[in-house]
Structure formats: structure tokens, C-alpha cells
Amino acid sequence: GGGGGGGADGVDLMQQISPALSQGFNVLNKSLHDHANKVMSSKDVAGVLGTTVAKSVQQPVADAVSQVFEARLVPAIEASCRAMFQQTNAAMLRGTDEHMKAVGPKLHGAAEQLAQVAGTLGRQVGALGQQMQVLQARADESARRDTQTQHVLREVQLAIAGEHAPRPDGSATVASPVQDAAADQMREVEGKVLEFQGNGQFEAAFSLALQQQKLELLMRLCQTMDPAQLFTQDPMPLSQPVVLSLIQQLASALEHNTELKMAYLQEAVMVLDTRTVELRQVMPKVLEAVVTKIGQMVAAPESVRGSHKTLQRLKHMVKGVAGELYT
Image 1 (tube, helix red, strand yellow):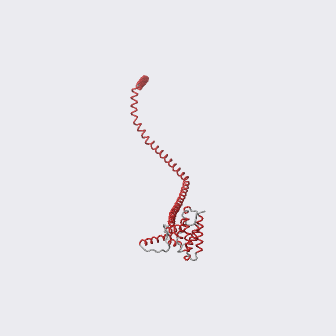
Image 2 (cartoon, helix red, strand yellow):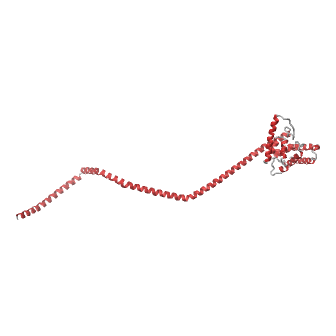
Image 3 (tube, one colour):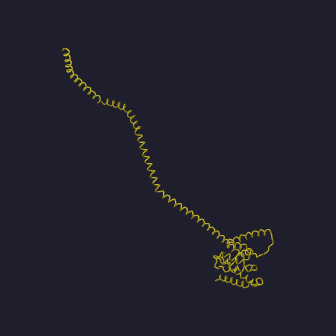
């Protein structure tokens, strides 16, 4: 009984004490809370606390950010750049290939056209070079003929003046070392004359032979050709100065090889052009000398028996040509 009463008294005591304790704890809690608010609201305390917290948090946060950047962001950026480069490269290669496929045939066609143009130009240049060579050869030949013509005219003028006359056919001379050298030189000239004649270069052949003022050489050349065929060629292969010089030299010695000389003279006189300006001063004297020589031959018929008619006909031909000079 007594124990039961003691237990009941304890419970009553706790019930009486609990409200008092709860009230005391509430007062203490409120007091602590107010005090904490006052402390936290203080600027100095807040600044110190913030600085402390910031310092304590700064390094961990930096380490965390670095780890995240290295572990996740860098690989992601590298992978993204690699993918972009591969896509760009593939697009460029594809575009280049398509462009080359489209342009390739055009470039090939242009290359073929350039090759054709280059070939055409090469052929034209080659042809032009050949034409230049031909023109140069013609210019050289023309210059050579002009030189020969001037020389022939000079020889004709000297012969008319009596300063230089051709040596008669077959004239004999006394041998000497100088004459032997001259004979060797003459053989070389004769070989060149016959070479010109063989190549159809009749102007060069007769010019060279006439320049030597040696009838024997001139007659060797005349014997290689038919005068009718020579003087009827078109165009006439001999220039007018050469024709006049040939007439002058052949008529200077009609006593030897008379028939061949008269055959040449008849053909040469027929092609003589009295309108040639550079010959108008010397032509009358040459033709006058030919008429005089023919007259001498006619006056001495014993040396040319049977040739009177030919000589008379030639004389009339020469006079007729000479008469054209005064019309």
C-alpha cells in the first residue's frame, strides 16, 4: 500500500515540475535565439564569418571546377572539334571531287585545244622560217645578180673605150709561173661556170664567164647549150646587161667559131630590150661596133664563105634594134 502511494506521489511531482521546466526551457531558448540574432546581425561578426567561410570553401570549389573541366568539358570540346573538322574535311573533299568531275572534261578539252593551237603555231613558225630562208636566198641572189650586172656593164664600157678587150679564141701565150697560176685559176673558174650551167643557173654562168673577158671560156659555155632553147625560155634567164655584154664579146671576134657566134647573136639581138634604162647610154655604141664588125666580115668573104646571107640578115637585125633607140 505504502509503495503504491509513493509511486503516485512521484507522478504528481513530475506533472508539477514539467510545466515549470518547459517554461524555463522556452525562456532560455528564446533568450539564446535573440542573443544569436544579435550576434549574427553584427557587421564585424558577419564579415569575419563570411571571410572564414569563403576561405574554407574557395580551394575545394576550385579543385572541383578543375576536375569537372578536365574530366568532362575538355574531352567534350575535343570530340566536338574533331567531329566538326572531319565533317568540314569530308565536305571539302566531296566538293573538290565534284568540282573536278565537272571541270575536268572542260580542262581536258581546253588542254587539247591549246595543244592544237601550239601545233598550228609551230607549223606556222616553221613555214615562216622556210619563207624567210627563201626570201633571204632570193635577196642574196638578187644582190649577187646586181653586183654581176654592174660588173658586166663596167666591162662593156671598158671594152667600148678600148681599155679592155677579150682575148681571142685559142690565142697562144708563153708559159711562165705567173701564167701557170693564172691557168689554174681559170680552170677553177671554168669548173664553176659549168657547175652553174649544169644547175640551170644560166645568169650566174654567163656573168662569170663574161667577167673573165676570155672568149675561149665563153665559147665553151656556149657550146653546152642550144641558143634557140636558151633565149626562148619564159621568163628569159639572162638579164639585159648580160645579153648586151654577150653580144659585144661574141661580135668582137667573128673570125673563129663564126656559125655558133652568129647563131647566138641572132637570138640575143631579138631579145634585146631597148627600153632598159641603165643600158641606153652604152647600147648604141655596142650595136654600132657590131654593125662595123659584121661589115668587115662581109668585106672579107674568103674567111666566111657561105655566110654572107646570114651576116647580112644579122646586120639588118642589129640596125633595126639600134634604130629603136632613136624612136
